[in-house]
Length: 101
Image (cartoon, rainbow, N blue to C red; front, side, top):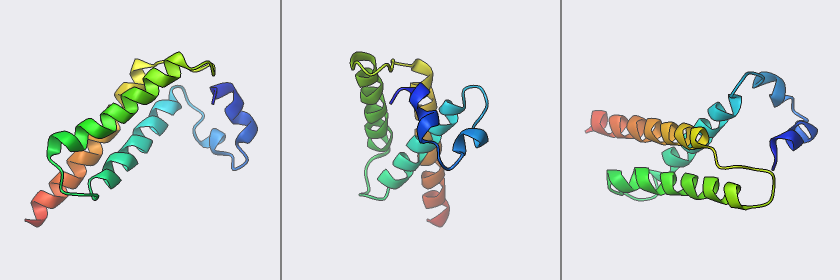
């Protein structure tokens, strides 16, 4: 959905909470943090797959935004924010698993 349409659906008032420049990057990072965090509990995948699969999903979404006619564009900074969220989630879970063993 184009960003200019989000204000019309913000009934909970989250727009006021996230009312700073580039706040969407924080949202991107958090969404992919959650995705990567949960993905690690599906199976005991290799570390490379735990990072690569969420990253490819993120990259595909950005590509689709760039080619679909919905007023969205490919954004390298969104991809970077997504990747940081993924790496933080994988790092957190892996460090917890290492501490337990």
